Image 1 (spheres, rainbow, N blue to C red):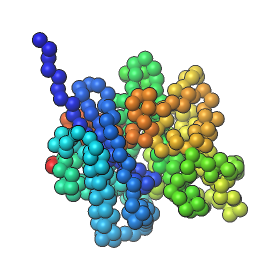
Image 2: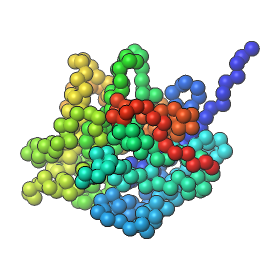
Image 3: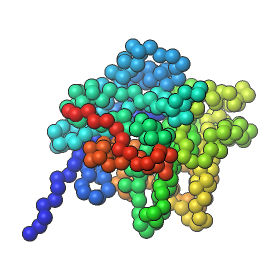
Image 4: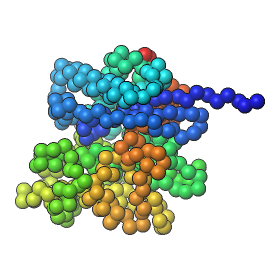
Length: 379
């Protein structure tokens, strides 16, 4: 007699990254010990007014409670619309969703504190309202438990990378090119720890500089960067930032890398397209330096490239130039297109939380041990 199999579990992940371009919604299914499968996706554009408000909050020295409340409310409504638009064409009813994993919008991330104060990380979110608007259980506030355990609360995606891409017959190297770039090293040896860390800025500076000079949100295919020339002297000044020499575990965010930081390194005579080309080079070089820090044995490498930056043809060319022994591979071969891994990660983290399973990796974040991440807001 055949043993009945458990029904598949459905989860939704919501992710809004440092690029502030929209909310990614991913529907995944988890069946037993099999890797999570991606079923459907939706990208909800960020309204211009909400984009402006969130950008101001990310760079404000002081904010009012009313500003925070207004931004949080508008952001949560946008999240709810993302869920609605994700499910509308599907046969999966809201009642079948085990939980929504909501990352929230990072406003500031300071794992080493600021001005001698305690460590903190702030994600704008209202999981109670999201549960009301969607009728789904919501899991949120994933980062602060790792921070409380002495970790940097980032990056969290490497644990999901391990669930998706870990193999017993080959090493795997995963690169996420979101607002910031982070690497995950997955050894084929089960006793080896997963290593993951931020290598530095990616789209956050490229998008910011493009918006300042071209008026759009991002440099399509890196065409504008490709029209410029790399300024080697500027690149040297940018790479002098101490962050790039820090050993893992390390994480970063807008609190360090922003347009004012860039302006501080300019002498005022640089052509705008040359700066864009140099920012792409900064990302490529810092990723290559990060891989060097891993001290991987000589030989060919497979680098799975994900995130919005994977669509930047110029950036990918520069990565290939600096990583001659690496084969750059799309995660689509594993059923996960480039843009949806981070949203999928927070759907998976919601599953971990509901099942009382850890969501962090101490070897990545520096936490004192494995921890169950996130708070549950019942439907």
